[in-house]
Image (cartoon, rainbow, N blue to C red; front, side, top):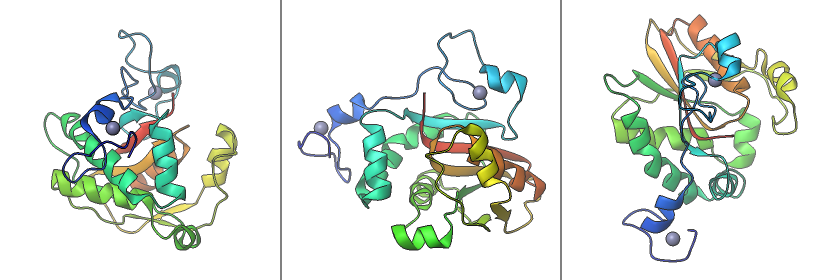
Length: 215
Ligand SMILES: [Zn+2]
Ligand SMILES: [Zn+2]
């Protein structure tokens, strides 16, 4: 997938390229923002205003070549890129938990118009690989009630406004711990909005799982 060498069994990436993928180092325990000092456990933002989700598990840094692979996956239907990043990231999601995994995995939904255009939901694909690898059920707990413009061109405040009221929960969650899967976390606006919705629907805890975190 990257260097043209033969991939590993069932995976379009060779061992050397997999080892070279930029993994997230020391980071904020809440939102996974990379942090320079090992003594710091929370970023400044989470210290001032803790997000509604309990924790974020992110595997890669959103930089070359992970950023290009995620773009190819989402916008050019390179489904094997999503598979490679999900499966090479699987161990990171497993080892983030010492005691119990979350009860349910749920993908961030796309509005049906965007899903129709793209042909698939990238978060659903990632969630399916992780659910299978960790033996956790995956359920569509969220639905997108509004069509919102893409987040990429917006600043942090606009992203929050853009998403207000965009999601609804599909069922009562009766204290369960829910892992919400997305491809990338940038400002955390989506994670914050869906967490509020899931907690209002009775979730006990919400964890955010992403393949990559922007520095
Ligand atoms: Zn390679
Ligand atoms: Zn943080």
